[in-house]
Image 1 (spheres, rainbow, N blue to C red):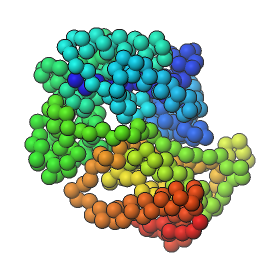
Image 2: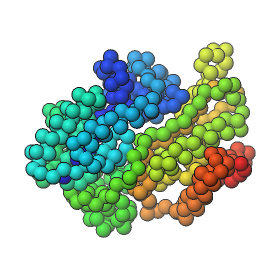
Image 3: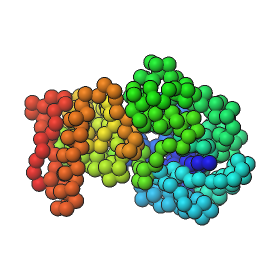
Image 4: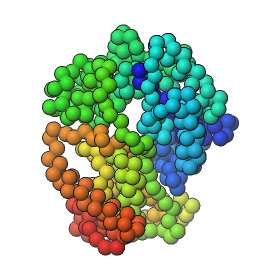
Length: 406
C-alpha cells in the first residue's frame, strides 16, 4: 500500500508550532517582502481570504483586519519539514519526499496494521514537532492523495483514511471533484466537464486510450491510478507550491519603463527558482502598490493573474506574461512604492499536460532550449552573467523579450 503524509496547512502550522497562541486564530503567511498571501488558516479561508491575494487587498475585506499576517520564514519551514521527515524515516526507513510538506512511502501487511501504524505516526509527529498531519493509504499514489484529503475532512478518522475496499474507493471518488484530483489542471477540468466527467469517479470510468488521445499520456496515467493501478513515477525533487518575489522600492517609481525592469527581474527570479526545483507553473500574478503612507498622493493598488494554456517554466513565456499583466494594471501619474510577482499551480515538470489544440508547442520547445542555454551560461560565468531584456515601446502581447547582454 502507498501512504502519503501531508502536513495540514503547513506554513500556518509552522507558525503555530512556533507560537501556540495562534492555534485558534485566523492567520495568513506572506511571501518574501510581505507582498502577497501564500498560506491561509482554515479560519482565514472562511473569512474570504484568497491564495495569492496581496496584503492590502485582504485588509479591504469586511473582516480582513481581524486576520493576523505572519512574515514567511522559509528557512524555519524547511527546518521543521526536515524534522517531520526525520520522524517518518525513524520507523519507515526510505521515504519519497514529494514537496516540503508531503512524503510518500510504502508499507506491507494487513490494512488494519497499516492503519494502526499510521495513527501512531500522526500522534508521534504532533508530539515531537507540533505539526498536524493527515495520512492517506491506498494502492496507488493518486488514490492515497485523495484519501489524505478525506482524512482532513473527517476528524473522526483521527488523521488517517484508508481506501482499501472497493466500496471505500467508490465512495471517495464519487465525493471528489475533478479539481481535487492530482494531475487534473484548471485548463483540463472544463474540457473534461464538457465531456461529462464531473467527478473523480467519472474519470476513473473513462476509456484510457481515448483519454490519452484527447489529453495526453499523463492524464491516462491518472485514470489508471484512480482505478488503483500504481503507474505514476514520482520526480525526485521536492517542490514549493508557490513562488513569489516582491520588493518595497527605496524610491518611488513613476515610469512604466522603470517599473517594468523591476517586475521583469522579479519574474525571471521566480522562473529561475522554479526551474531549480524541476517544476512548472500554471498561473502567474503581478501586483503593484502606491505609497499608502503618503496620503497627499493619489492612492492606487491592483493585482491581476493569468492562467497559462500549458504549464511552463521558461523565462520567455513568464516574462511575456508578467509584462502583459503589468501593462494591464499600470496607470500614469501614480508613484509606485511596491510591486511583486507570484507563481501558483506549481507541479513537477515531468507531469506537464499539453493540449490537443496547442499550436505553440514548437515555439515553446525553442523557448525552453534558449532558457536552458542561458541557465547554463549563468551557472558557468556567475548569476546574471546574461539576461533577457524587456521592451516596453512597441510591445504587443505575445512578443518575446529581446535576448541581451551581461
